[in-house]
Length: 336
Length: 245
Image (cartoon, rainbow over the protein chains, first blue to last red):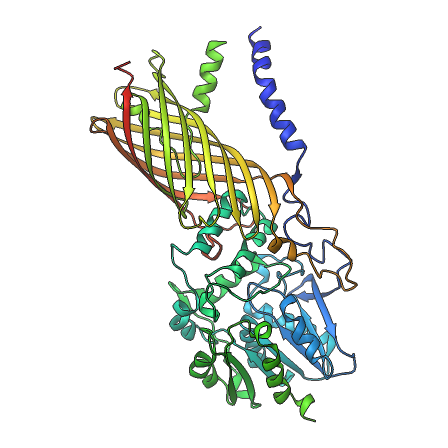
């Protein structure tokens, strides 16, 4: 009898819980919070790369005729290829522009922590080069982290690089980053954007990739990156498909942090690259003209730093015409 | 049947959201208590509680309580975000000095940010096994929150991520749709609490480590606000004690 009366008491709330749960979709379902990746949706354009024995699908797009010289565009951190479509389109009349979501980012397949190292990031570029320009040099355009990675690739494979053009590359040595970190990253406890991300964690737990990616895209609309922009409170729009949050987490681990120090160095071997490097720096950004002139320029045997007035870190969105004018004045295919 | 209910309540015992709740009125013989304080999870919040105590006349579980709390984030308060909680708790007396507080709470919350608006709900189980002597008590804290239900209304910013997906410009079959969803959102807390009860007034503190369960192995990721700390400080005033009832 006691069991029966216990059931009578317990059944209604149990049924209520079951009804609430069974009528709902899971936040983990593909495409609920962030777009599917190429391994989840075969309709997305992709290629595969094998890095250290592990094959991963990459979301990749090309612009321009296949017989044109190849130009790679490397995207920055907390982003994917989407905001660079204008550059790719703009350069596609003289180059075959190849752009891809780096492994773990955007619509590319997610990877494990072990798969991402600075060496494997370089190997990824090498694998793409083998597919699109196995016998000829490539020109590389890189922004922010992409600029750092382009520099690292050039220092590792100087014989493979035709020209190098960088948009506000990240500090190229750990010692530079150590000095600049506090100017680049605004990390105040009372920062409303950061607190909004914490609060978001009450609603949606970072239990899996999609939920963490969903939260991480809030950074792109936040004031935590105010040092990068002319209007600190209103960062320019930066449309993305997916921030690869786990990849950002792993990359942070690989690069270091301000407490234990940043130990990376993208500049070893740059002496072998004697061509002039173009570096664009905005007048507003913490990684802008002043920083590039003071820190980055000296790491290259030859580098020219150009200031883009009234521009921040997202200058290819803000000042597209000025950026393209500088690229076209620099890139060999436009000077012939 | 009464035993079942009592055991159920005792098993459920005290309550608190991620921030930790004010069950310490059980140690103050409070029949009615109001309290307020700050809590960090690790974003800073302000909260106000109401506590109602019940005497049971049982040696092992001498008091039960009902608790309610409203909680507001401070720095993230661009929109009306809040947590509302209801819970039950109990005091376990093992001897004169060794005791435990335990509780179970239900919460309903609203969160809005650039990605959308969320209504979310779940439960939390708290356990504070502790030691009491005179006017003070010290109690380790173990907490487990499970929040399975969430109503999502995605904002334009979240929807924009699904545009321009396919080269042929086809409409994406994916994207956040307004409605109820479920998730496995567990938060585990372990910390240390301290309470001081000089009179009708009381103050209690609790701080420790929290871990949000995830498949990715991430313990801390400060960039996106994943940090393994929590803390709360709470000031209470007993409006009426059980003895004066």
